[in-house]
Image 1 (cartoon, rainbow, N blue to C red):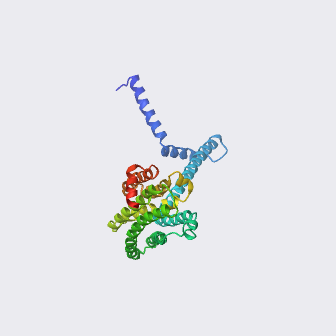
Image 2 (image 1 turned 120 degrees about the vertical axis):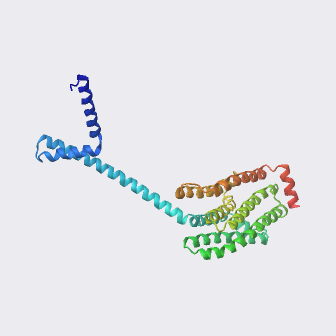
Image 3 (image 1 turned 90 degrees about the horizontal axis):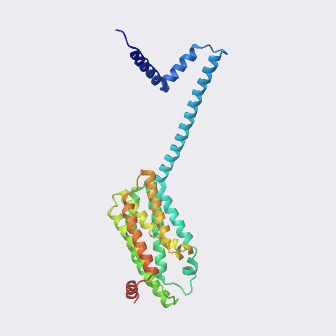
Length: 311
């Protein structure tokens, strides 16, 4: 059968397209290049030199690819080490960091306001400080016990914390009221009644988180995050010792940043933020805003409440 000129053209076009597709394949191209180089003598001929240059180009490309892969592997190794560290040591590290923050903050005021105060402060304030310092030591110890896999001891001591927490709530509220009365009657300070909203908010958040942590004590993913949030809720007392944070009423921002670190830990280690944070932090911010508002603005309704509390 005789083909027309147009048919010859189509056949040639198909062959050309197949050749181009095959040539664009890296594996086929490299094999073809190797075969051509093998046929050439390894002398000083022009084709041999050209083939050598092409081979060297392919080798350098492979070296660049290997270097890129090595960088990727190094970055993955660093990421994996970071994940491993945060997974194992985040809560223990944060317990030490919060203890350091408390020592740093209170060291600015504790001498004049407690140790060598004139006139001397009520004994209740010493009891309050002892209880809250004990909680910090308890938090560090519990985090360390989990890290060294002494879970049975951790659970046993957990009941001590379950008993200490309500004592702290009662002491926190009572101390706030007693010290406000002391400041009004003994130190003759004015307009400090509205500050009661701050310790009241702290004790409400702390007590609520501890109650939920006890309820979910058999669910570690919930329990440890609630204990962490509860401890963070106490940190405004230390952050507020720094004049800038107190004068600008932003000590709660520092507290929330500690909680955000917990959220970042979850995102890095587990690629998601645990729902405990998502449910706990927004209501906390609302309560914090309300506490700061009632403190700084001191609306009439809050004045009525504080007068009823203080007598």
